Length: 363
Image (cartoon, rainbow, N blue to C red; front, side, top):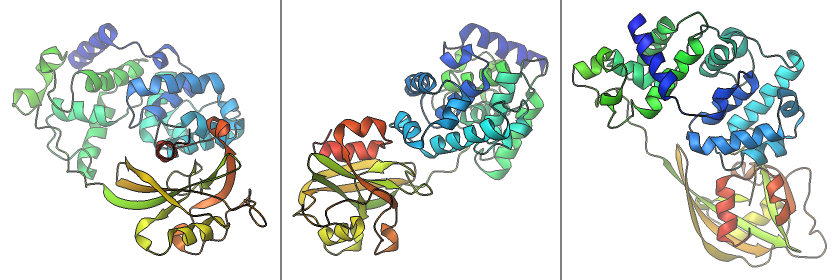
């Protein structure tokens, strides 16, 4: 489709946003931007991307970094599994590939944490390979141009979108600009609601617009409502320090630090349950308020309790491993530590943890 290519690439050359990762061909910097941009707005990502590269300017620097440092820089960006997988992938590139990224989509997908979309982005933008990619923006654009009436999140619809993306990707080093043009069109013009068709450079090639279906496509199965999860949070202090637990790597918020949490619906005495979890005695607990935090599949409603660790014999917190968990639901932590508030900036703290600490007036 030469006309489609010419129209979209010309528009992209004129109208593309001035984004910092578009000024580099460094595969590491491009990889970082693509991982950060997954499920996150561009304007949110820009300062994170800039700070992250300043701290870890090369893939080798990231590979050598402690996970706490990586998560601290990621803190507030959300979807923390991305940061852990990025860290693991950097170690693989630094060791197995001697710091050099494979220059094909197939080679990139062999690296832990790099999936089909990210591999296509790096291969096409950094190396000029004729590799396709599909993200939410690209799926929406192609579903409208070709009037795809399958659910583009479903197996058949997604397969069709990928087939079209692969058929359309140009050679001759233009794949990177083409892929970015598709994503740019979806982000700025071919919007999920109220698409700006009058400003679209490929409106005359759009089957959905010709059929009057531009606002009906793409078809998407309705998302399930977030599941309600009720938790109790403990903000316990001792000598001006705050007790935090580090979550196990394989679970939700893996590797991050937070005030210890328990399921609110398990019943029983909250103080006794928290004492069993952290392995130390607590003074009386006070209700400090509530916090609500919505994730993609969960709505967390947190009751925040405050108190102090009892001083005296046996009051020391184990620094290397969590106390034995009395119930399976309490086995979410690998360590507890008393942390100075001034040191919070060196730890990975999720937005939820910061909300809980703020409710307890601990900053």
